[in-house]
Length: 360
Length: 239
Image (cartoon, rainbow over all chains, first blue to last red; front, top):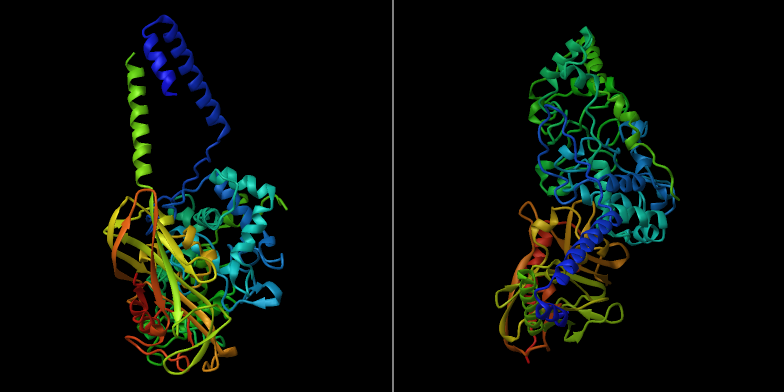
């Protein structure tokens, strides 16, 4: 190299060199251009924050900017039952789109080898606005959440090593990893990041409530009254527009047969006993049954649960219940009608989040 | 022909830079040797007794060593900054250093809290290494699994997954070593050995009895009690 440079310096200056220089530069540009065509960069797919919504409390995509390719890979993985130890259980098994990504009509969910979970599968949407995941908030980042269902013996029952081996032995997956991350090897990091890109991009913001807020629709009279009742009785925990304040509270559900003490499992503080995450009320119509163990099967029964709470009889419940909730039967129905206006039928049918073409 | 002169200088600088980095190519190798009852630990094969006369076998012994500093020099690259010492796999760490004399080594026994809460990690911190709590995010700092007839737990097991980074339960801690005077010659490897004495695991600041605490799988009081014994376990092997 050095010799060539020195030779060039000795020949200096001549017309010959400037022509040579010009062609060299031309070919360099052409080469770089062709290279950039060959190495296709993934197309960015940034999270869209609905108008009027707060900014997410922290940026779940800080080190993992979503791309069209990463999202597509995450979607493929989300729907792939082969990743479980018996080939049957995918993420989607317990997070079905028509149930706003909860398990439809099941108090508990099914894992491999006829096992059951011990909690109700939560709906998956607006995850970018959450500060902790799972009913007890034990998961502190969206990227590390899938490690749990992959490895739990009563969920997918697999090891991360085996999941990666399955992915790496599949040519289609390898090309998807290459498209998303520039390299075809499946690693834990890429696996979790692509799943986070898919699940973290699921946004529910097109219910009748949202349309009313945007001035595109109007509540009917019953919904209007229900909305007022909601604001008076429910909104301190189920805060608009996400319909949760991301807090953990004891809502009076008794200790269940699994001795599930909720948040206390994570913090070790007895004051956190029986506290569970306040779930969003969006899509409540389709995500039944309710509560952390799925023990209440209908919305009217959930409302009855709150109407029956008494702070005097159970001083361990959240102080928000010091003020007793009282509704007439008519008001109860009005409230429920409003809650049904939180159903986002766009999300339930959105093809971007639906099953992809099978590649296995 | 300014461009050629520039290219020439760039080349010269490049070659010089490569030469300098060759000069930095010395290595400090830190070996971890594990003992109990004065015997070198062999997984599963042999039994040991703690000071309370409780006999035990070891199946797994793993822990995180991170944020190393040699005479104040840190290693920013993740692959150099985070290490999983695993008796079944790897028990040494190699650090690139410039030639010179070194006398002080500091490392964190554990994983700094920021890596516990910033999403998926790679290398030694890959959750596939089985040192990660999946349901309550965070790293297990020190994992000791085995069996003991003194254990009243299922199948006489000892299962100590000692960790915790939040809610006042942080157990990751820095340990400082005086390593004498290690002379690193250019382009060569020098080794030091850290002895890890498991006898002190059961008895130093606190006493940990297998009969009382065979299981520790959560951050909290017991994990903190065990972790208080960690610094006493690690000593530099004399020359």
